[in-house]
Length: 448
Image (cartoon, rainbow, N blue to C red; front, top):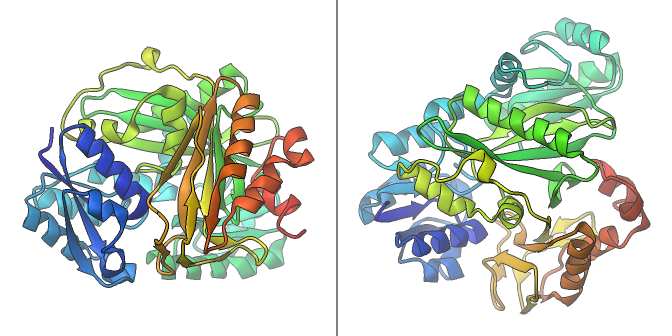
């Protein structure tokens, strides 16, 4: 096992990795911006290194500053968390070339899966279903129109290097396709430095279901079952749960085994998530793989009893997986609600400011992963997530009842939060009677 790990991230995930390191007897060092000097996770780390001003472009995204910090503290490994540089293949390669183990997949696997078009081709090779669309990148308007006519409108124009909902445009006819083609390419060029796009058939009333996988450096790959992440707002996840509603056990196994098959094809190592879009008939299609730990990983931990952060560290340190697929048991129901500092009555605008009061719910089946505390200032420079409220129980009904009770118990003042929206969703008749798709929240709650 490593002696000292540098955590190249901030907030809730930095605190989560610190705790895992300490439980494994590993020293945890964090980098921080000037805005985060007084953060709780900085105080709980064995050491911290300030790497720049508040803006992430001048701190958490500065590779040279992070490597300098690793050199200063004599780290053995670097854990990238999620977001920031976590899926940056150049950062991965620089870490390894400088002698630091990167807690994640190899550079080659990250590169091949980071290009969505290449990842789709890989999925096809190993028999994982993909959405009908272009065979590769579309370079001209004529090519785009030809594909759209073959698969039928509506279609999505998607950035090959995209992520986080950016570089995606829907087109419902030829005129709209002509317009959004250039829009998506330009957004992708600005956001990712790569204007390449491809086209997929748009699946109406689609669901977002993903499978967690874990792989070691010796060819062993297991899946840790699935999470349904369909409850989204502007393509950003708000609620995640497992098992996926309405899925038969056979369909769940088929989706998760497809994810493991893709990971083997990519020679993937460490933790990763394979994402699928699911249609109204429960047919699933591969869309992308996230080569990192996910925000919603506690959902899987609750249902399987496997600590994914510790698993990441153990695999990165060279350990073989200590369990096989038959040992992975999915028990009960788990659900996570993201508590964001945002004004739900004002188009969910971020609500930065000082947290005056924070009362965290407790009781059986409740977990709250957060880095904030009374007096903490939610910065306008970073993601607005305050924390993740997780509940788990033997049945869906009990788990939902615990979540409703926990949301009612939680008190946060000083900033506005997403709690009122979450409560409206979970108490609604629509949530009781429908299996939510990705448009569920915006259709039923955002314009009312």
